[in-house]
Amino acid sequence: MKKMELHWQILIGMFLGILFGFAMTQISWGRDFVSDWVQPLGTIFVKLLKLIAIPLILASLIKGISDLKDISKFRNIGIRTIVIYVCTTIVAITIGLILVNIMRPGDGISQDTIDRLTTAYANDSGVTSKIAEATKQKEAGPLSFLENMVPDNAFKSMSDNKLMLQVIFFTIFMGISMLLIGEKKAKPLKKFFDALNDVVLKMVDLIMLTAPVAVFALLASVVVSSSDPDLLLALLKYAGVVVLGLFLMIVFYIIVVSTYAKINPFWFLKEISPAQLLAFSTSSSAATLPVTMERVEEHIGVDKEVSSFVLPVGATINMDGTSLYQGVAAVFIAQALDFDLGLGAQLIIVLTALLASIGSAAVPGAGMVMLVIVLESVGFPADKLAIGLALIFAVDRPLDMCRTIINVTGDATVATIVAKSVGKLGKPHVENWDDHLDEVK
Ligand code: ASP
Image 1 (tube, rainbow, N blue to C red):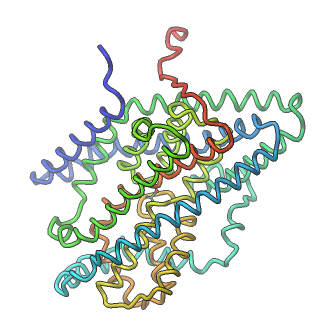
Image 2 (image 1 turned 180 degrees about the horizontal axis):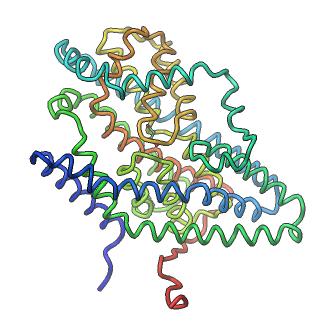
């Protein structure tokens, strides 16, 4: 019997998870049951994915760079990647700003709704902690981004997933030095990292076997912890604008992939769909990274020389979905609270949302922290920040899930485009989890 494709298995898991979550909200002990007995399955899955992220970046980036044989190629890939990332992010913010200015979702929010949302969330720890974190980030100097990228202890960086950029820095440094000592001397190290890379990709295959059950658990927990449906309804128009913008970004990627890379965009979307579904279920591009890398390399055919750099860097600095959301959310809050935002202020939003998308961590809810900085950049009164965030907090988690899909799809699209532009887009070569099972037996 032909096995059901992975993305269908995951979709069924998600669907059943949502149904199960709703059913549990109807039972008095349902919420506790889900958080005690179901949620841990999802949490373990996310931990497993995060567990292999750093070894995967290390092994695959070293393999990618040491395969290059020529450093100028790396510079070429690096420059293209950063330029394309900046361009796609600007497209995303522009789409968001155009939509929110045309559809004006903030105008329809009544004072009563504002009051209800403020009472419900303005003092919520979720909101206050985001403001506190934003203040901390804002206090950092202008070059702190670069400063933070350089580690002073490689092992310390490797022991903290938040320090992914430091690991990337160290790995590139090491990879380039390996090129410089010559192929013969570097051979043992290269062989080691090649094998490590294969092993970690196999671990991704094995972890993905549990994905359908894990997404069931993740979605059931999201449903039982979601806000009052009434409040969600009041924010429907705002959420609709964000989702429409995100959808237009998918259309944009499809156009780019089909016209430039000349590949069937629907095939492209189908092949990366497990990564998109995980992005949705986990709300974290960092947790999804191992799967994105596996899909883009094995299923799309992007050479490791490109994907090993473009994807980990993208997971940390390229967040098209997040920046689109920040543009829409900032203007929505301004509209609802009658804070005037002229063209100049909106251009500032483009710039700060671009920087914010680079600075946002690839974890759930990070986009909202940076939204505080975006709001402050246009002079939004500090005493109204909590009210502003309270307005959008109720729908933040579902929107986070949606924008993370776009963040991951954007990375995969850019990896494909860069690969095509340097002649590194080849044939897919899928490895299944049980390819060598007979030898083991
Ligand atoms: N959750 C997003 C990500 O990991 C970041 C955000 O928008 O909050 O890509």
